[in-house]
Image (cartoon, rainbow, N blue to C red):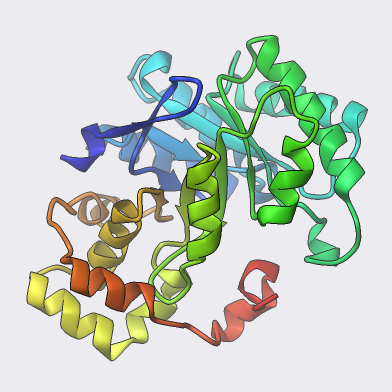
Length: 284
């Protein structure tokens, strides 16, 4: 069963292949969502400072009834933080807010602040923030460290001076948006890819070809899309607070054929509709 399967990061830390994304889950509902997911069998929980629900996620982790070392808990440094001192303080703030003595993974949420997505030059600021993550990693506060939404040039900027290479790059990857070159580059550098929004923020549900393919496998469109990201070699992070959806999202023990993988890889979503207001869905 996929909930029992893991990948191994470059530092030998095990990370579950399927996780729970918590974007858009309110702080006062996050604890209940996390405890429900853990009860179902999820062991990988993903949040971020920007989600505004770290407190609730931490409460859910602490009250889950499962030993802390059996859970993989990740958060992300706010995209606007491009300073070593501020980053170091924010790492400690996340630990305090979540009520945890360590995190299993912490990422730089974006190479640019959201207000300047894919904009100016933040190379030095990213190196400063990365140095703070390295310090926290060496101090044992973080079991692994990584980045999110980083393109190859952003990764190269860190790798040029890093004492610890990123263990993870969490990116938008789904049927309809498969950044194959970036995925291959991360694989070459032994950086594990995590796929957020594996169902394309819901846009893929409107695709008739994907619906037809899912019917052939006797699965739902979300199940097909989650399986697709897993077969890309990525951690899949579908987001939901609905326990029924959590269960369904984990029922992906089937194999997509090579031909169908190629078809899904070649699909393109050009417009995310109202979601295009979010930088990551803007097409930049």
